[in-house]
Length: 271
Image 1 (cartoon, rainbow, N blue to C red):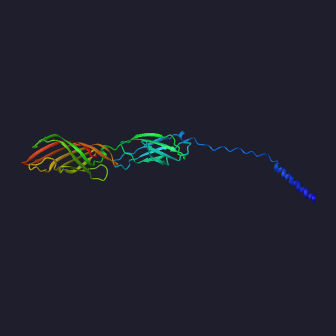
Image 2 (cartoon, one colour):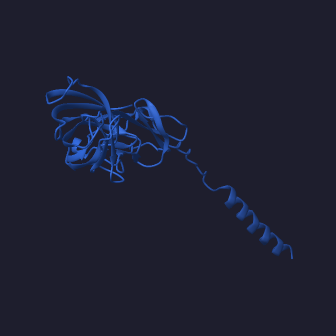
Image 3 (tube, rainbow, N blue to C red):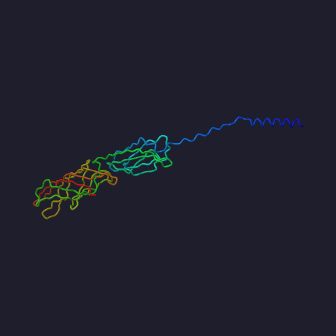
């Protein structure tokens, strides 16, 4: 029994010595995690602005901005400014659509990226002067203050003087440019003016300014030729703002009066 016990003890000793005599284990220090450069050292590049073919009804009035994501920076979101004012501070893509714009207007945009800590890159900056629909596409609508000057006059009892009066135009369509119903304040003149591009014309039989022998307005022959000369965006519609043209007025009443007046017409949309 003693001999057996010694053999076991010997084996145990060998195993113990074998365990304690193993070579030392060297653990290499962990490399520190790579740290991104500060956001302010980056700059947004490739800012582009796409504009539409501007339509008169305003349905497609928007600008599309696009840019390149900065390489080497983990972007949390982007901030877009227009003319120095933030219009969206939480853009999550590299495309932004601005629907609050108008034709014929200059805008200055800047785009910056922000990291999770809210630190911003240097912005990309770009300006644009937007295009416009043609004047011929302007919607002729509303009241115009019109100055009428006499070019020629004959057959009238009293001297004819020009002056200012109000013309009103009511389009016969729901949107865009089209023919209009024309009415004149302080006169019973009215009729449909047919549109051909920027021109509006009509040959009408309606009262205008010449009175008969009894001092009453009666029907006359009018040759109306007006043209839109300027337009601007108003309430998201491309609207006519200035008109000019001529009106030839002929009033013929047997044994009473035969008069004619050629008017030069210039007007502007009332605010």
